[in-house]
Length: 349
Image (cartoon, rainbow, N blue to C red; front, side, top):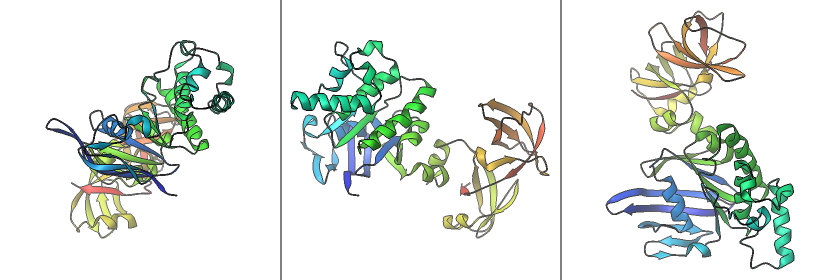
């Protein structure tokens, strides 16, 4: 695959405030990327720079190896062949679904335009709603119309700015999967901006976790979860608790659960005797009635097929555990637990 989009050390600022700081990334043809982070981290500003709505003050942005943004030099947004799906969908209320989708196809002949509209109606599952108006659709249907309209002219790159923020949580997760399937069927390269890691995980091939205008880790969802680059990423992505430990060997650490020896600890190069904090995910802590190690249930959240238990060890240290929901333990009850670690994540204390 070839690199379609490249950002080389771009910076953007308002007056004296630097919003984006020497940020770099590459996105290959057909890949879906995501910028993930808290409000104010600069992720939407990066998207607007790619679209051409904001200038950059340093660095450059290239599309298919051609520069589209440099300081004091910028290709206008309408010439970039970049599509965008906005937070509020921005549909035309007086146009039908079909006419909204075909809005950007004025350069096509009437038969070409109709063929593309028909293709996209089928692609997003709205053929039966072709003559409906936006106010007659659900939020999820409106979102799919906005996506189809952005895809209609076959842009080189699609940008999605918090596209699910107006939808409820259950619908977000389902639509995330649908949007990924639609983009993959169209072989579309795209970048999503979101603060919701569930959306990011559902849609993206590569995710850039942002903090204070910089990407602190660019990786697959799996790598972010199991191999976070630093404490910020480990804390931000997924649920988990840090527990104190001491390095006892080149690949071993002692925590309250006992000594854990893992090959993947060696890469961090800790000295024996170093104090560290070990990240335990809820799926690392396993319910086991026969384990000699006991923990007390201090909180629980029923999530359908599982409970998310908050458990207190004898020292008072709390950990999280995901347990099948037929294990219905009351608050205050002591249960047996053990560790089942696939990856050992430790940081200096």
